[in-house]
Image (cartoon, rainbow, N blue to C red; front, side, top):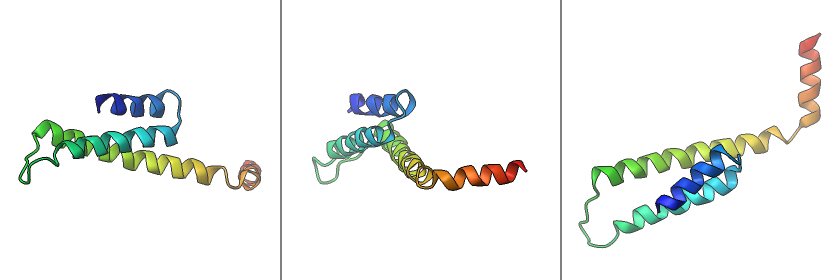
Length: 88
């Protein structure tokens, strides 16, 4: 579980591979939530709860960045045209 979280951080920050980072973040979140599925009334510690919240934020951020990268590459010619119009 900590390994998946660290790999997600590595791929997000170092390699800028947001898809791979998102896979690892989902895996870490799944593992962390799976730990608490044992007893019916299992309680999570504060540390586990914070880790879940942190991973959920990371997943949301990575999804937004991944979608932003996909939208950025859809119309490169239009982007150049807008840049030249702005420069006039």
